[in-house]
Image (cartoon, rainbow, N blue to C red; front, side, top):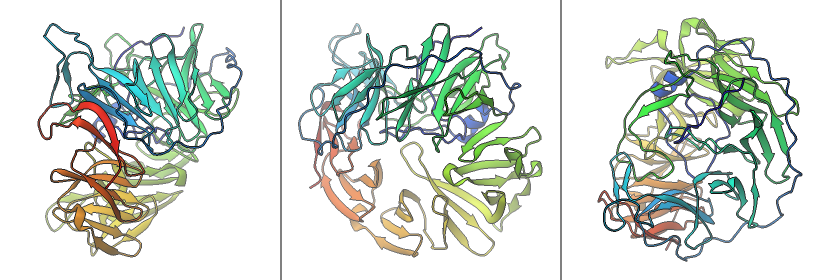
Length: 534
C-alpha cells in the first residue's frame, strides 16, 4: 500500500553529502555537518523491489521555442511600494522572485511587517511574486526554482498547481498531476521540482501511486520512473545526469508511531519568504531515517537501494559500509580503521576528500588535527594534516578549497582543479573562486591570488569590504556605505552604487530597493529597480 505525505514548509536540498543537480538563482543555506550526520542514512532496509505497475506515459511533447537570451535588465519598477523580501533572480536579471505584503491581513491598523533576527517575518501576510522583465509581478503560492541559465522557472500557482515557465519565450506548461507540497526544512530547494542543466524532475500522482518524472527542458519529452514502494520524500538529479536519486521513507525508525521525513532542528526561518538573517542555531534533526535509491535515466529502469549512502559520483554511489569502511560499489575506498569523515567530493571527477579520525596528530601548538586524504579512483594520497575547508558566504558557501600542513609547509589546495599552492594567504577567508583565481578579503585589504602562478594583486577599491551577493564571477562588495561591483574573471571594478544591493546580475547590474533601511532591522521597501554599474 502506498503511503502519502502532505506537509508544509521548505525542503532540504542536501541533508547528506549527496552531490546532485540542485540549481537555482539563489544559493541557499546548507546544514552543518552535525545536521547532516543526524539525518544521514547509515543503514538501509533490504532492497525494496519495484512495483509491478507500469509507469504511465506523459503528455505529447511540445518543445521550447528557439529564441535568443533577453537583453540586460531595464531600470523599470519591479513590485510595489511595500515591504519586500528577496527570493531569487535570473543570472541576467530578466526576472525577479520576491515577497511583498500588499494587504492588511491581521488585526493591526495598516500594513506592517516586522523582521526577527532569524529571518522571521511577523505582521501582515507576505505573498511571493514573480516579475518577468518589470511590473508588479504575478502572485504565486510558491517559487520553486530555475535552471542554471535562468530561462526556465518552476512555480506553484493557485488553480494551476506546478507550472514550468519559459521566461525567454513567454511560454508555459502546466505539469498536470504534479505534487506541489513541501516540507518543514528551511534549507535547500522546494521539493516540488529540481533542475539540472537541461532537465527538470518532479513528482506526479497517478491514481494511488507517485512517480518521478524527468522532463527535457528543450525537447519537452518526459521520462516516467517508478521509485518503488514507500513514501517518496525527496528526489534529485545527480551531477552526471545519469540517475535520479530518491529518498524513500519505509519505517518508523525513531519509534514515535509515525513515518515522518527528517526535519532539522533550527531557529532559521522558512525559506520561501524569509528576511535578512542575523543569526540562527542548528542542533540535529527529528524524523525517520530514509532509504536512498538510485534510478537510471532509462525507460523501465528499476530502483536500487544504496545502504549507507553518502554521495553520488559519476561512477556510482559512495557509501559507508556497516563496519564503517567507505566503499564505491564493491571497491573499498577507505578502511573501517580510518573512521573517515567525508568533507568534499568532486562527483564528475570521482574524487573524494576525507579525514581519518583515528589518526589525528597533535601539533606543536597542542591542537589535534586529522590527516587529509585525497582519493582518486582507488588511489589514496596523504596530503598532510587537515587545517580547514574554506568557505565564505552570508550563511555558508563551500568553495572547494582545502588547507593542509605536511610538517614543513602550509598548502592551499583547489579540489576542483587539483592545483596546490604554497603561497601564504594570510588571515581571513577566500570570498570567491574562479578557476585558480581567488578573491581574498583578509581585512582592510583585498587581494586576488592565482594559485597556479602563486601571484597576488591588491584591489584597493575593495579594501575593508565583504561580499554581499554574487552571480557567476560578479560580486557586489559592501564597502562602507556603498556597493562596489567587481568581476573576478577580468579583475575589473565594474562600478559603484551608494545603495545596498539585494542581488547582482552577470552584466554587473545591481538590484536595489527604494529604501534599504541600512543597518536597521527592517525589511527593504519596494519597488525594486536594476541599476547599471557606474
